[in-house]
Length: 202
Image (cartoon, rainbow, N blue to C red; front, side):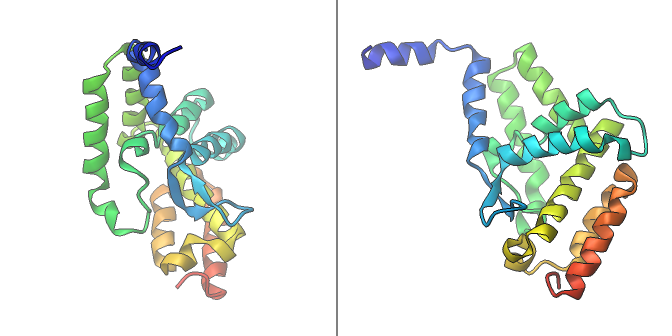
């Protein structure tokens, strides 16, 4: 098959398939926190999958009833925009304009590809951003709970030490999702206190 034929095939792909190829970048976009059992940093695709897994496993901790299937879908797509803008470290300076950058990127996605399937994906992402449903709130809670779990478990390679994160910063993150994750927040509280005692958090 010559290059022109290959180019023609790629040019004729459905817009959903073209978008899927762009989203495959999530398998390479690096986050700041480590994996729980490795020196390597977690990638966004891995993070999204693990948040979805945590939703399925920990849904019984949600203080309000949630639709697990819907919450799992929200977890899968909650960071899709990072294929276009990269990861934003929760305790970094880029957090200031994160909302504007990410919403502009998703508006561009819709402008370029507005099929019903893409609209469904963006609607799930919008639901996560709006934080008005129990499912969105629980996913947000998992998005805080899991990185704390990983950093505490693998403190040698933690983003806390690398970036000089303060215990008060991590505690604020837990406090913002406390109502959404019930007893899991108390686990994070203990981890933060111990990490500060051990000097892993300032």
